Length: 130
Image (cartoon, rainbow, N blue to C red):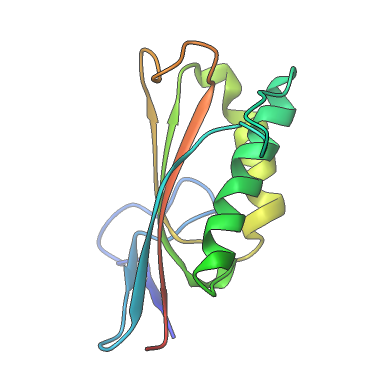
């Protein structure tokens, strides 16, 4: 359903986790997933960096499911991290949850998220047949 492309006249993606271009077909249902952080359903933040990354992705997947979608429907991910050293934990959790989906992606380093203890925030856009 989603057309995933890498233009031949720009540099290839720096890893195999994303595509440069993802096209949503006409008539598709589109879901915009608000920024998800590593809070569990009770509002608690896990103690470890790895557990925060895992919980943030669990939350993204739950938000997709409520829209009747999954990893295969993800068009675009935007991730906000406060430290480049956190990227490996973020990327490992992403790989577990997205598998081969490879959506268009942007990762940004920011000074701080809304709460200083939050390490990651992940937004997603997804599309499914209408």
